[in-house]
Image (cartoon, rainbow, N blue to C red):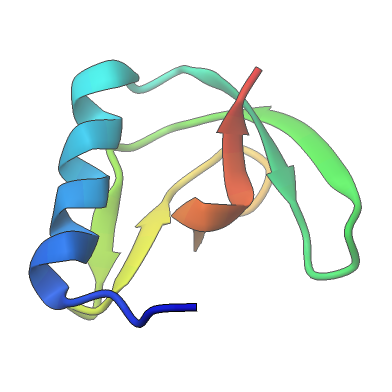
Length: 70
């Protein structure tokens, strides 16, 4: 898997935010492969300027790559 540059990571967040408003229904896949239905409570952002994340009702903050819209 190719390592993303900072600008590519920011682009992932920007594209998510253009498509999906806060309050979007999503499924989060946790570290054990279990899926959790929840909603977003923030825009996607870079955590620590390096990791694309989004804040949800289920867990405060989760990797954007583990979130999909339902």
